[in-house]
Image (tube, rainbow, N blue to C red; front, side):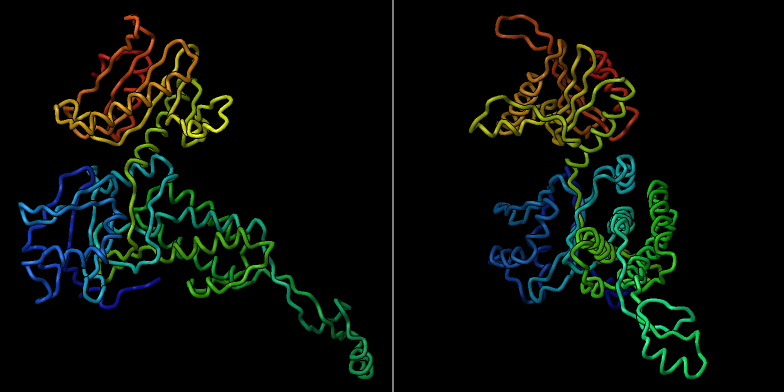
Length: 472
């Protein structure tokens, strides 16, 4: 684990804070000047200096989904948040040392994000920039985020239970191993030591450096998950895995986890796949955050979460709960069983990519959910839709209708699911009228969903019962 020196004196000069799905941030020229050392910025040529700053920091903006443009009228840099949340460092364009950070906050708040990840059993987790040094900032993710995953890879490796093979010379009271009969006849028998046998044995031991490192990691995780802020689900799952690992390695003493030692350990071919995966997970765990009670700061790697992907996992999880309560069949892209296939494609391969996010079917009814982490529902309601947004929305409707055409059920309900980013957001629904001016048995719904399980389940119940007026 890398720690920063003089953590208490660490001063972040440049701090940029954005909110996903939020407003653009304007960086005026005077503020932009402060991003550079004294005397290293000329206000007459701001684009030249901005180019130098972006050369070293553009990858961090991209990691957080932040785009930018220069506004000539305002003589300012405009930063535009995307659909990611997270934290990344910012580096001084002169010398490249970390001198600040950029954070994109969730609209829901940090605690709500933890709750959502817990709801979906942590099957979707943050991305980390593993080659970066840990930084200090609010918004750093604690190391226990990957506790269960790390323990699981160790447990999987120990299924093979690698043992070391070592030749040892021992003195025993009974014949054992490959006995040195010459030594026995010349050094034991002449002196009446008939029960003294010198021999060589093969020792199959589990007391290996890799296992000592594993136990060291386990002890570290035990300490990390002991705090009150760690979700109960994490503690329970980690606890079960810890017991399993300690039972298998009960006679192995822990070593202090060390990244360089882990990197240098050589694993025999037969064990390599499982053990190398576990070693990689241990190294990643060591590189993640560490809470310092002394400095009162969080050290951690840059990280990001794609909110559209998290939203899709959340919708899929609770839609599955609803389908099971209903006694319906459930298919989803996440479970890789919702693909719509075409017969006799030959070279027309692109159609293999048709995969609805969620399909719920029972008897003669089918409901398809397509998850869109966009502001379209808000734009449509308040008439703020540009031609590009309208075209993208039309494409989404066509996509949903194409998915619905793959169902053979008599009644079809298709839903574009959006995040509910305003309490005043109104859901919309319509029934399809075909080209002969005949009402079909197809309903299309545009629906804003909050990150609240009870309300989402209620909305699904109304959709399935075709009580559209209840949530419009």
